[in-house]
Image (tube, rainbow, N blue to C red):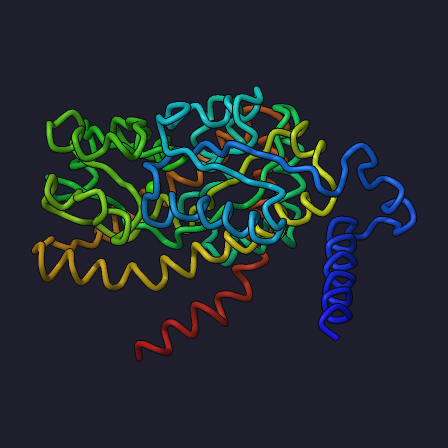
Length: 371
Ligand code: CA
């Protein structure tokens, strides 16, 4: 009886994996192409480099969770070791390390690679653009993932969505922001398209990895910084280095993280391990948003009640100008090259469509809940 159950379970598991890996391909072709040069028992040891301190809440624990799921589901056949920023490569060299094969996988944020292509920025966040729910819809059902794969193929990489923070906070400031004048000359850590908007309004955007923010803010190297939201900002102790905590995170309304995989390494895996990676990444993508949703509230209470952080909302006229400038900045980035234009067109078309329904669903519901 026990043995029969075991065999049945094995049969179902194997069929499930094959189906998932093959997707919509013809089953016969798919069976034929299952890697014949890899024995079923072959074990793989991979390195996964990240842009976060080892085990940093949410951002750093997500790749650890991913590695554990992959190890469990593959029964140890794919063993992935996760490295914090600087352990194997610096935080902002993850893309190159995986592209070149120094590590098989990476976990980071697409907008850190805007120097490779301005299109990467659209895969993290568009200022005043899509929220987490919407970007997940665009990536997985709106053509986003296919464009992203096409873009990264040039770099010998395969991308997967690797988590989402939800709407972020505008950031930590030692100076009040009462008008646009207060942005002029302000040196702020703010990456991606948000940084471009900030520059257009006379600010000085600076790019620093997360691990350097506290010291830069405390020593006055920068006047302000954005990071993520209460859960992550509390972990870095940013409240000790700045007085005001501004919202909303207009620049990052639902930032998507990424898993990157070296294309040759991925192709060398048997199909069941490829399927395990694909589905583990998708699970972790959703899991991160769940975790932030649960933890941000508690962290915000701690910041306000225990650490006496002053919460401030950006003035409406400042937000309006930021929004109009964001539209210009996104259009300018799109004009850099044909691929970026295609990514922009796809993202904005999806957003326009989704907004029509979200206006009478999500938005109307949030309003109704506060009546
Ligand atoms: Ca951020």
